[in-house]
Amino acid sequence: MTTKVVVTGLGVASPNGLGSKDYWAATRSGKSGIGRVTRFDPAQYPAKLAGEIPGFVAEDHLPSRLMPQTDRMTRIALVATDWALADAGVRPEDLPEFDMGVVTASSSGGFEFGQGELQKLWSQGSQYVSAYQSFAWFYAVNSGQISIRNGMKGPSGVVVSDQAGGLDAVAQARRQIRKGTKLIVSGAIDASICPWGWVAQLASDRLSTRDEPARAYLPFDADARGHVAGEGGAILIMEDAEAARERGARIYGEIAGYGATFDPKPGSGREPGLRKAIELALADAQVRPEDVDVVFADAAAIPELDRVEAEAITAVFGARGVPVTAPKTMTGRLYSGAAPLDLAAAFLAMEEGIIPPTVNVEPAAEYDLDLVVSQPRTAEVRTVLVLARGEGGFNSAVVARSAD
Image 1 (tube, rainbow, N blue to C red):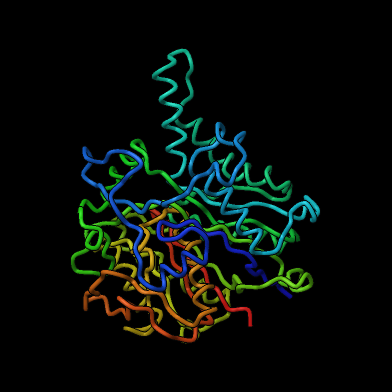
Image 2 (image 1 turned 180 degrees about the horizontal axis):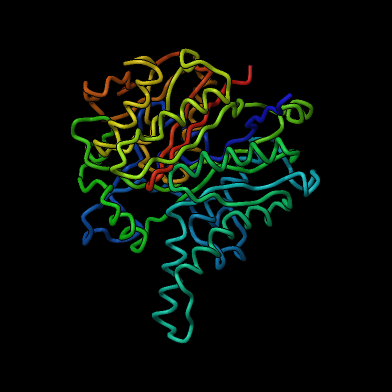
């Protein structure tokens, strides 16, 4: 019998709420966390809006000795992990150290750390650390800091596949639990709202340059002109279902299915891979399209990418065949942190029986989507499909299912 893998703890850090309680209260009510960048002066850049996490002071949560060796992304990840473990009722010191592991994702994060290294290079010409060395070291640190801080010596790793990475990390965590590890810390926190990171994101030509927060990020809208960047995400505590029940853990739900594909070469004439990823995830979870209660969309807000996603959804579920939502319109795209945050929202939606809204969007009729807009929709939510795509052709899909 295949081991069931469940989520028992959530640690959320989002532009519209710190902690899962505040995040969900804001999300269900349609409260946005998007505004003008404050972490640096954006006046000289074409894009000036972001989803920044307000009120996060790392020194309030972490020992001072960690400050010199971490950047904002890692600090948020460490604190979100603390919250997730507490939510799961897990004290790492009470568990065998090789029964716990860490598998997270990273994408745009590391730029702030790299920028600091470049500033050292500029100010101290004799000290040289290449950007690539900085990133390689940083990716290891992000997962390693969580492992070291919590005494976790089981499987550890970082997945890098842009926005799809958050789901890929969760899938890898599920594999490790099925191989025998009892508990894995997974998900992702991403943060790169700094000048170097901003320039890199602008180079993608996918950032919205509008200055009005309510009109900047409009997936599936005829007025879509790119996304708003954001920081944050969610850390999930994943466990063997039987072990979780034995210790009396609260179970949010199951990671029931996963599928991943890679898009064909541009100009090949072959179909994009998102539809296949959806079909693989449904087959893995052994659910039919009609069993899915809501789809959390990737929501690129680039007309061509929105069309591809809409066509994949309607091909599987039929025109307006399933409710679709994109609560990331309230946070911005959090890169590898986005899909884990959607998973957290999915589990919270299951608990309350509502689908969170996609704010500010007037869905274009051409997409044939049943997009939940403006207000949350009351519904029985038991099976959820979460989609994520990474720049360069990555496609990932995860089916989450309620515990009861």
